[in-house]
Length: 395
Image 1 (cartoon, rainbow, N blue to C red):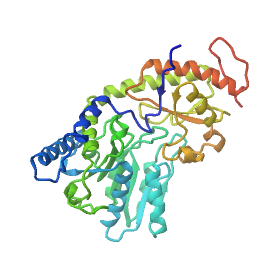
Image 2 (image 1 turned 135 degrees about the vertical axis):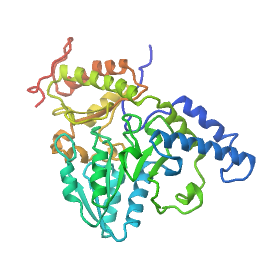
Image 3 (image 1 turned 180 degrees about the horizontal axis):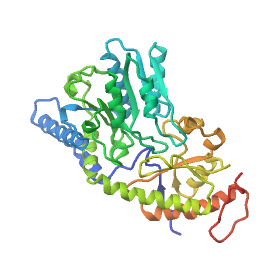
Image 4 (image 1 turned 180 degrees about the vertical axis):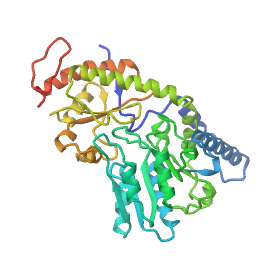
C-alpha cells in the first residue's frame, strides 16, 4: 500500500527550507565557522560571505547594503523599528497602526500603551481594506510613527503602502511596514515606496527560521535594542552566520516575482473556483480586495474550523485556522473580527496558503477530499458525484 502524500498548504506560517539553501548554509555550520569579526583569514572569508548575503537581500528590496540590519526575525525587526521611531521622535507620544496587524506589532503597541503612549488602531472594512481617509484623520502633530503591514498574513489583503507613507510623511510622521508576507509574492521596493523602515523574514521564502532583516532608510540613525559593534553598531551580538547565508541564498531563488505570483494565483484561483462549485455559499474573505496571489481564507458556513482542520490533517493536508503565532489559543481571529465577521463565522474559517513547492495536483487532491469531509460534518448522506452543498444545507 502506498503512503499518503503530505500536502502542505500553510505557507504563510512558514515554508520548507529549499535544498539549495541548505547546501549554501552547510559549510558555515561546519568548516567555515570563524567569527566574522575576527581578523583571521577564515574570519575575513566569513565576513565577505555575510557581505554578499547582505547585498543580495538589500538589492532585492531596492535598498543599499548599508540600509539593512540583520535580525533574529520579523518580530525583532518590527519591535526595533517601533521602539526606535519613538526614541527619534523628540517627545512625540502617539502611534498609528491597524486593527489587523501581526501580534508582534499589536502586542508591542499594547505594551507601549501601558507606558503612556497613545495608539490609534485604524479599522478595516468588510473586505479587510484600509481607508486612507481614516489614516489622514488619525494623524496628529505628535504622531511619531505609522506602522502598517504590506499584506495581511490571514487574508492576504494588500494595503496601499506607498500612498499611506506619503500621507504620514506629509504630517511629519515616520513610516514602518511589516512586509513579511509580501516579500517574494508581490513586488516590494523599500526605497520606491518611500518607507522609513521595512521588516521581513527569511522563513517565509524557503529560507531558515531565526533570521530576518530591517531596512532603515539612509539618514535615519536608529537607536539599537542590543548594543554592540556588529551591524554598524545598530544590532549587537555575533551574527547568525549560517542563517544569514541561508537568507541570501533564499532571496536569490526569487528571480521573477511576477512569474511566481502568476503561478501561485493559478493554484489559488483553481482552488476557489472548485470550492465554490460544490459549496457556493462558502465565503472567500477579502475576495473583493487586492490580495496576495497565494492566500485563500475561506468561511465554511456552520462548520467547526478546528474539527475540519483536524480531519484534513488525517488526510495528509495541512492548512491553518488563524495566524501561526496565535492559532494555539482557540481565540477568534482578530483579523476576521475586525472585518465585522461574526464569531460563529470566524470559527468556521480556514486559511489555505500556497507556495512555490505546491503543484496543481495538491489542489486537485484538496478538492477531492473536502466535499466528503464537509458532508460528513454536516451529517449529510455521502454521494458519488461531485456534491453541491447549498446554503440551505449549511445553515
